[in-house]
Image 1 (tube, helix red, strand yellow):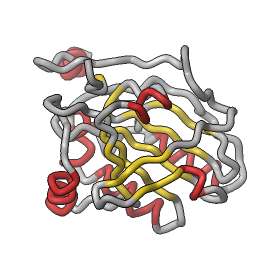
Image 2 (image 1 turned 30 degrees about the vertical axis):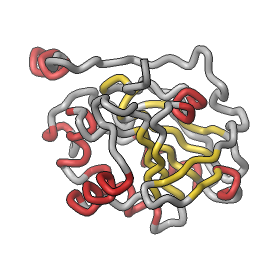
Image 3 (image 1 turned 120 degrees about the horizontal axis):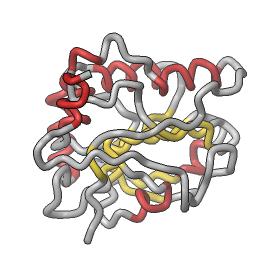
Length: 204
């Protein structure tokens, strides 16, 4: 217990427990569409992926909670596993210029190469418009949209809200569980969980 509490207290890190209040779209609702530019300068619309499952992963490479999942290879493993099954995986950076986690397209591409990341695309959201549209609160914060454009999951990546890499192998991965259930035609057993991590570094 002491180890768990100590891991939550990280200097300079705001651990944010999200709620669904004020959402533009709630679990069970059709999600708002968006247009965003990725790290290669290509434009993506969520509506372009109608008929496919879509994962939205808010990230901040300066955040120890995000680093836990990338340093362990956990996030990259999930990206590869699910994109190989036809899932669209969109990583989103909503950090404002000058804030922790902000990256230009070339900077993010270099980082992806370094960590061997494998999302479908990384969407750059320096104004925070996309983050606010989905009320993303933390990095990581995970959302899953089904093939009909309905939000079926909102919350944490797993049930271990720590920065400890050693917790990854024994964690219950909510994202994988939700995708396994949904792609098998089953209802998602835990559609809403508490997102944990660093607060999204929106513009002031």
